[in-house]
Image (cartoon, rainbow, N blue to C red; front, side, top):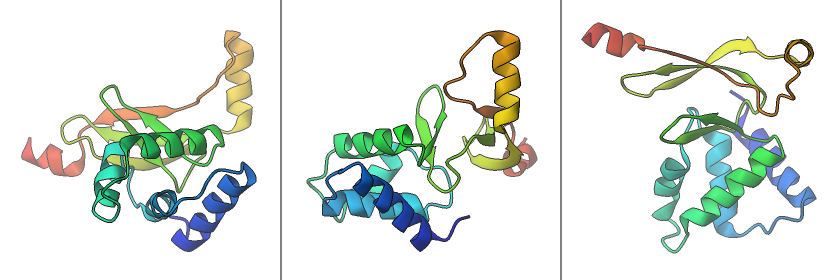
Length: 145
């Protein structure tokens, strides 16, 4: 995991470069993203922040995440029912997803530019969002069996 303070500074600097308005709510949201050890959903981030900022809307969370994603500062893990976000490793890498409890763990495999280029050349596709998701049972759910 990237140092949370360093990652916070990187995210804030990226938003400042885009002249994004940095309200106290957005700064707190960025702090949560930078310090997250897992892959929180937008709703999980909203639930963590609403106690401190009860008037904050879901829209603020989604808009901030969408901008960070567009800037390649967060990586969206697109699950059918909900998306989760990785703010510590925003580059394409594999994720292992438990089909029982929905736990998400980072894999060490990455999709380097050379692999993506080969896939594009072989398929004729323009790959917009490379992602590897591997589904199975985590060690806890496997034991519960």
